[in-house]
Structure formats: C-alpha cells, structure tokens
Length: 214
Ligand code: GLN
Image (cartoon, rainbow, N blue to C red; front, side, top):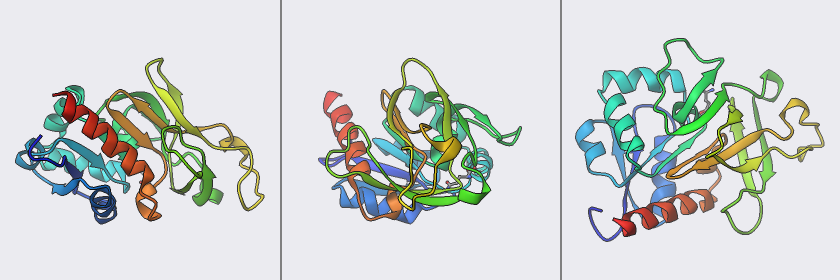
C-alpha cells in the first residue's frame, strides 16, 4: 500500500472513467487514472469501467497493459468491473468478437448485450449481497448477464421477476448480474452513474481488507 489511504486505479483507456474516479474518491480512497504499466504498478487495486469491451480489449494490447493487468489480477489485486469491465474479467464471452481478449479473474461465462434490443437500457432496484440498506438502483446499458458461473463464484444479485415499470423481465428474470470471486467483484450494471456509492464502498472495503493483510 502506497500511503495511509488505498490507491485505487481506474483503467482509463475508454468508457466512464470520470464517474468511477469520482465514486472511488467519494469512498475515501485515492483515485488515479491508469493508462500505462508504470501507473498500474503504483495502485493497490483497479476498477475496470463501463464502456465497450471490444474497444478496451484492443486498447489494452496497444497500451501494453493486457499482460501486466492479467498478472496483477491473477496475483490477487482487488479488481472491480462494471458492465464492459465485467465482460473483460470473464473467463469466456458469448456474442463477443472472436478477437476479444479476456483478462480473466472470474470463472464465469457472460453473454454480451444479453438483455436484447427492446430493453437495451433500463433501471431496476436490486438487492445486492454485501451492500447493506435499501436496494441499489441498478442502471443497465447494453449490459451483459452471467450465463454460467463456476463453484468458486458468489452470486450477489439476480434480476427480480418484475421491473418497476410493471414490464415483465421475461428471459432476464433470475439472471445473475453481480458476482464476487475472491478479490474480484463485478456488476453488469453501473453504480458509478447513480450517485449511490455503496457498491464502490463495498469494493473499497475489500481493498482495505487486502492491503491490511499484506
Ligand atoms: N455492450 C458493451 C460491451 O460489450 C458493454 C456496455 C456497457 O459497458 N455499458 O462492452
């Protein structure tokens, strides 16, 4: 750990970087943008933002971050991915591009853009394990869901039967949209967009616990 407060990087190649930097800062950690390997070396943990996973995958190679990031994640660096970030962490992706690279860290298969065109973007209230208090307002934007998960993966949230608008969730009901596996946390939705920082706070708690253990 670099100082008294943990230093949490936000992968800053593409996506909603600013929103994650603000959410991490609001949780009392030091938030820094990560674009190069030397910046990755200096962080205790990292957030992979929402955006476009295929673009991020390509940029990770261009910026020579793919292997260093894979290694840090494999060695237990606390990592949180939202939406496209969840896709990057998955062991495997359905409906991805054939050349899409995975960072690994989560023994899950995700389906990209899983919620279909008519519900490309929607919001629901979700109970998320590890997030105390009222349900979390979850914003889904061309989101993935977790199609299958290995034994070591904790399911933290699933889509409820009915949405707030009274519209049935159809195929989406019961789908897994938040998971944790050891030091890796992922949500198919975007808590960075709502001003409710409880998911980031839960991640910061994971980071503090891991840096205290060193
Ligand atoms: N559909 C995007 C992808 O494949 C993810 C969308 C998001 O992060 N909001 O990466």
